[in-house]
Amino acid sequence: MKINGIEGMTVSYIQSEVARGGKFVIFQYCISLLVITFRRGSNIYFIKPDENAAMTGLGFTLLSLVLGWWGIPWGPIYTIGSVYTNLTGGKDVTAEVMASINLARQS
Image (cartoon, rainbow, N blue to C red; front, side, top):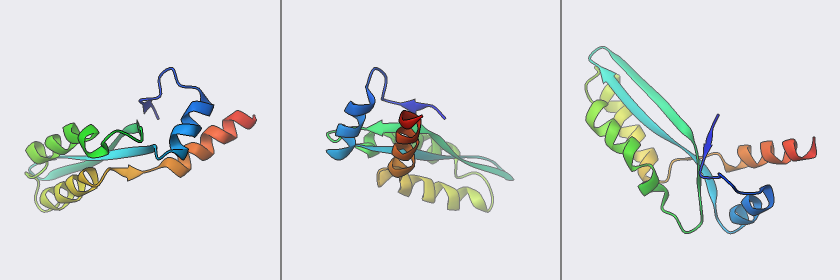
């Protein structure tokens, strides 16, 4: 899976940013087509300590608000869940990404 926001960063820099409060997150979005509803996750985004994760995920939130409601019955349910997840900073996957980075570094 692609990680957005780490272009040109070294592993030690990423580790120092995570130690300062940076995190890796996945945003959710929902798209409905009357009887079919899709809830998906974005690529992974690196959020630096001084960045606002909710603002970074705003596009996914707006996408869900516009296209997510229309499926019955899961559209409204998944849309509310996706919007809530994104407005609270996305799904934090920092531990998994850092474990993968450290494992790759040891190889």
